[in-house]
Amino acid sequence: MIANRVTANGDPARRSLSLGRSAAGRGRPAPGRLGGAIETEHVEIATYEILVNDAHARGAEEVAALLQQNLDEEKNALKLVSEAAQRIAREGYAQAAA
Ligand SMILES: [Fe+2]
Image 1 (cartoon, rainbow, N blue to C red):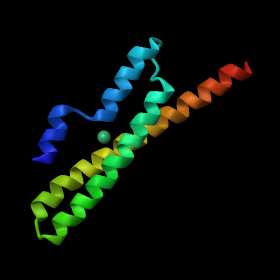
Image 2 (spheres, helix red, strand yellow):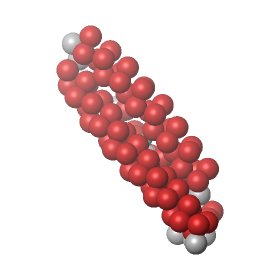
Image 3 (spheres, helix red, strand yellow):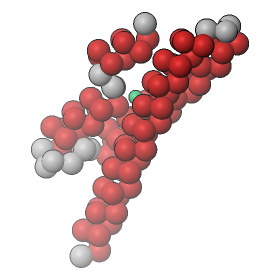
Image 4 (cartoon, protein in one colour):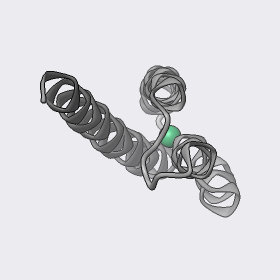
């Protein structure tokens, strides 16, 4: 099942953030990694929206509910990554102005 596979393998965007932190070596995600994470979340959201709609159309409501949970998680992940990107951008501009 898709829901279990996504949970078992972890969220690609979250892994990207972790890799970015390691690469930056300063406790911050690298900006390029955040862009990739944001892109990944958008693709995942679009995919789950299609899958949820398809499940509803087929009358597979239990499947639709599981896919909706994944969709909600992806939307939350996008929010977190976008907030991190905004925070890093603000801090970068503040350091450049100082
Ligand atoms: Fe994700």
